[in-house]
Image (cartoon, rainbow, N blue to C red; front, side, top):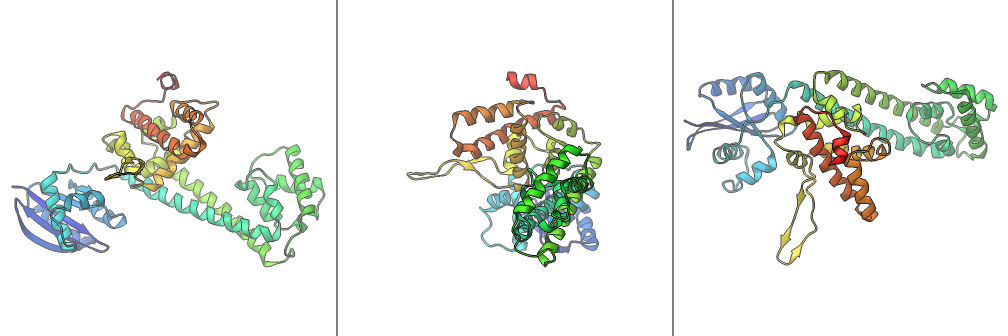
Length: 400
């Protein structure tokens, strides 16, 4: 006797349809809480080895997944796009009750394998990584607002350092939000202020060089507001906020690094030139246990860089990537390629060689396409390292 529980998860409830052989013998609704899951538990225990299927619905399905894992039930968590395709032949109307039935019928027809259950650490890393991304978005917003406010108080200040980023820059902005605050000092006094402001060790000569440049910029500036204007206070606040958020980002990475100490794949991923601990933490946070994918191509589909092709009659569209799936992971991998290429001069690899060779033989308009190709090759390499518990060997890589 084959028993299938199709569960359609919504915000606070879930519809359950129980299919035994060819007949739906029971349909009921549960709440996504302890009493609701106890009802589901009782129903599951009344059958021998029931199959369970539900759609992945983001945060709403997390509660059901956690309950099933705690109770040691095997389940199939299916991608909504996959379920929509597989249920299309027998679903005409759409209601929660019909969706629960449809999921059970899809399981009976396609016999999906149980979902690979990752260790709890991967879920925690995922949550931390998403918080990291939220902080990153907040930093970008704070920096954009800081740039806007500086245009009123001291726009030239953005040229004092090579980057408008980091602790030293934000400390200088907080201390010298208006040129009048700079013109109060001579070069040597400014150098002392700079040495005091930097969170890192700095030589006196570099401090004097920055001080001289800062003084020249202040003398040239024609500020739009006075030194006691609200815009000056806004600049100070936004610089403090950017620094605070950047500190929170670093704390998240430190926490993720501590949490992942027992994961062997970390050392294998770190062995690839151009990939640092921050990238590794973000990748694991988004991809989870890489061993759960049956192939590197499955990871490509998961992050949406699998190629799609469209033909209709005489019309043929240019092939492109699907852009379905995990956009965060796609963005992280895109930036990873840029890091790998930037370090290629000292640490070449098969990925940097591929990118540079393609760039030399192609126009600059194809940069994004080349990068996507490099991402696919990087995924294949990293997947190989993790699956085989192997470190990256540059000699083998470049020889191939």
